[in-house]
Image 1 (tube, rainbow over the protein chains, first blue to last red):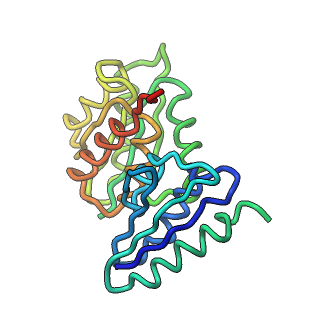
Image 2: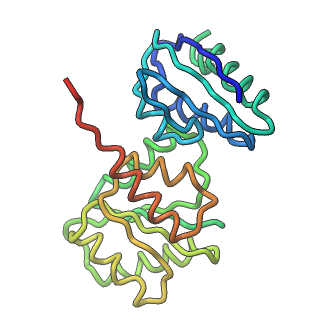
Length: 89
Length: 130
């Protein structure tokens, strides 16, 4: 199991399209993936789960992956957060 | 599994929800049709047209009908579709969370997807805690 803390840096936070992109990025991985913030943990492969965090810019979130391709799944998530979900140039 | 999704709603509801789902998700992973029922629409004509829509959507795994209000005409017409040989489940109370959750699980069977839709619709209702 891998765990990493990251701070949401895109202006709109984990809004609907960003949540959809995260789910999409994780789609091909076998590992399970979770996001946690403010004491709430959700399935990162579920769009409604991710949205229920209502996590805005500046919110620290914990990413967790668990499974045979957990390192690649973690990297895919981290990349997307670091690229600000391709929303800002 | 490829379940077809048929939205049966009051006027301007269905297209608006599909538009919002496209905005969020981009390409939709399941075949979708929208049937909006106008206030003055003839119910029998609407039923025939809904059945034609449903048949076109059915790739062999059935059709999930999502209607906006249980007991209203679009939903009442949907309940008559099995009588015309349409294999379907109808889930009422359509909202955007329901729709997004359905498209999150495109591999599910018709029975599973009906439950997924209901859970998504309920779970998307959140009362803010001050």
